Length: 247
Image (cartoon, rainbow, N blue to C red; front, side):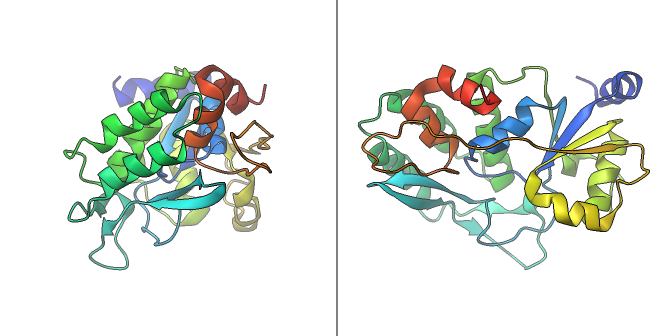
């Protein structure tokens, strides 16, 4: 759909927006944000930071949380996320598929979720980390049938939208004609400290999502905040959708 049409419609009706950096196989709370907004912006025009969530996440392997990490090529410290390429000189794609298959080999919904992930990981035409993450997130959203009216936009595609920290977020919201910004609770302190949203005309609200228990196969104790892969492999697509919505 034409972006101009979206902007015009947003200004007329009012829209809710969430903005998050593109994350590798993110946790259920990430998808809860998507499920509760009209526009979801992948914040890929900010500096890439090593050892964060952009190129890694956690799964359960042999009963313990285990990092699964995408190797990347990094040219300089100030590189923006959308410019970061994956490092295909390493056999990480096959390694990740094998690791996920091994970790969830006896789980009831393993075949469906591994098949979805594998299809995207095996596509070597996806050379940039942000594109990989976006494709994975959108594929999970489609399969989970999450808020099918949500519009996905990459911040790097927006022109003349600058600023730092919360100023940048506010400018994205106003550029898109959104009158409400839904933020993860973890950003509450700095958003309130910056104060950019005060008297801005854009309402600042915070996500209300608490990860609850779901049965994890062969697990003595529940481990929360794992990749969405863990949720789906254990309870399936329909139950995962309800879990994300908080039902």
